[in-house]
Image (cartoon, rainbow, N blue to C red; front, top):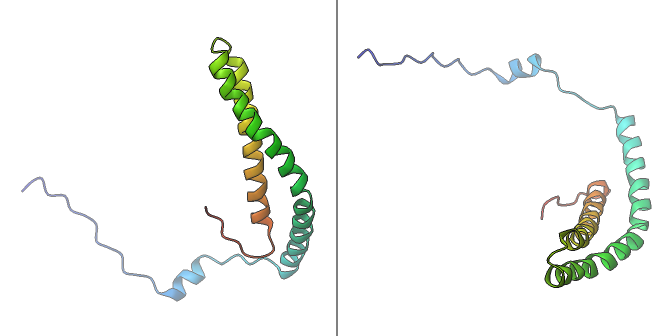
Length: 116
């Protein structure tokens, strides 16, 4: 029995009072929370107001550029920079739309679900 490994004994569980004295909890001041709430609402309203033109521009770019990328891939297979650039513009516009909506959901004054 020389291959037996001895494990150290488990420490006794600490009481709840010991844990709170060891690491103090960080509390933000209420004034900072109130200022952040006001700034967040104002920023949300401005960005929400600008959402329609941004989504309109990105939507106008996304589908046509994707279709152009597919057409260029079929019609001009010897020019990868052509269909690659169309595809990149289409994907970038899509990512901008998604990221903008994610930012609005994060800044929203109401609690929103942050998962798909």
